[in-house]
Amino acid sequence: MKNIIKKITAKMGYQTDKKQILLLSDDWGSVRIKSKEDQADLIKKGYKVASRFDQFDSLETNEDLELLFEVLTKYKDHNGNHPCITAVTNVANPDFKKIKESDFQEYHYETIASTYLRYPDSDRVLNLTHEGIQNKIFIPQSHGREHVQVNWWMEELQNKDSFASKFFENEFFFMNQKYLCSPKRNRDLAAAFDLINLGDLNSHKNIVVSALDIFYDLYKYKSKIFSPPALFYNPQIEEIIKREGIDWIDVGRLFKVPQTDGTEKWQFNYLGRKKKSGLKVLVRNAMFESNISQSESAVDRCLYDIEQAFKLRQPAIISNHRACFTGRIDDNNRRKGLFELDLLFSRIVKKWPDVEFISINELNF
Image: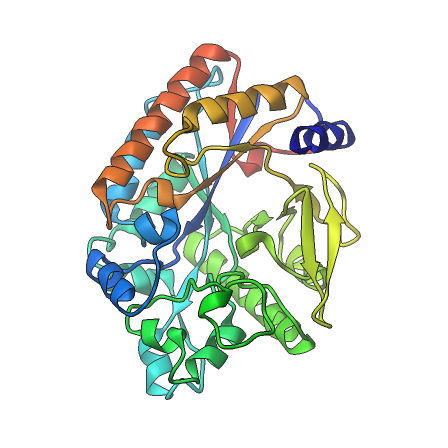
């Protein structure tokens, strides 16, 4: 069924004979598991480590970027361009200290410039990011402000017996429904732009503007993509982000659109679909996730996806997450991810000598 939908949407969407590869990697900038010690403490407090993100993902370190850049600069396409990571980035995190000082009555955030300085071994990440931008190998784009639904999280924190309160000292908020007190929500707190009422929508309008302002302050250019965390958002923010310079909205082919009355509506998408707001739809059609399966080769899976995209005369838009390349929790995770990324690029340039490695700046139609 997925392959049939891919073929249908490819016929409806943008097509090209160029063999272009755009790699989108999510969650840069966001805190997740603070340390190995915090991971162990979360388990003691009742959290079940159930995903690769809970196992491996954490704020990127200086070494994470340095080693990633070494792999990227090993390869060039026929135009002389290195592979490029389009780093889908959260530009802020909760300011845990100030929230606690308010007795959990007020939400505060800090930009990632502060988070990087506060976390061990991340003090040069922002400078390294600017080097990546200059060398066209690591180019941030917007993943919103923080990776948490602020209103819902604050409500949970105000209940002293909640899991959110228990996990607060570990700077952890990636909780699904079974850890939440409210029965109204059927998704986790990480879906920052999910909503169930008009109050959520109004706060999202303010958050997205501040997110894009902070983005510009950090990187000195405007983001062209808006990729909502977990891909949930209400289209009433589209006119705002278009006005702020966004050209592309990153969504799934089929996805649920949350409504202000608590319901959901299905939306169908394809690459290049023009929305009423003027935004163009970006749809991912390939995947490289080195730690998603122990039985399936991430490289083989991605090469297959790329081949299918090229057969359908579409750019290969690869979905990826930072968790593949982080070593703060487990250095073996980073080693495996970089080894497989290296292998992927070596096989790509061999299989398709006319390949073009692009960023969103080169995807123009």
